[in-house]
Image (cartoon, rainbow, N blue to C red):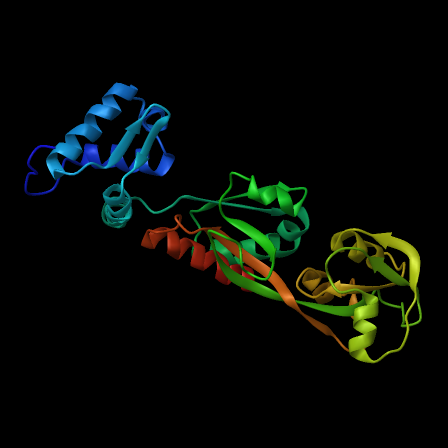
Length: 284
């Protein structure tokens, strides 16, 4: 290996090295930059000569980082991200679009009522929503800002609580306790969990059973019985009088509704400020 030079290597070489290390090969880095594999290999060879260190082990099956390459990669990644973030903060334009994904029921109950509040503080930002049919689909969803239900821990994602899940017996006006109990299947605590916490004895659900909170609340609005309803999702119905809380104990859970995004996104001050304003509007 040639004698190392003093100073900072060319940025182009560092970017190619970061891509090859992150993606695990020269071919993948070449595709990312629209270069040939030979051009990537040359840039990395130049970087190794500049540093006086071998960063990759070349084998017939491909390449792998050396110990020194593994040590250098996170330093390069942090530096490139800091440069991009600071450049955006100094010279970038304010975001003009906010795109959020979530279950249709979450978009309807949490996002739609918050839009007027958000537009008061961000009147020039266009809001787009992407609905998914199942929560498992969020892992494959390209929209990176998402509303999720759970306990706030998703690998590789930051999260901020919008509202904790609280379940309360609720029904349409005129429907009293003693009416059929609308059954809801899923991971939320059900009527038997509520009865045990509230010391209400045995309960029997009706012959109607739904697999989503949205449908259970809809049935309750139509007077079909009493739902163990989500206070955050039923907020508009409760405020407008389409549903009312019965004078019975509530059931607090360990779950909640969260605004989440990948850890590597939202690094600039302007992007973080936009998300903070959206979160504040969601919280109402």
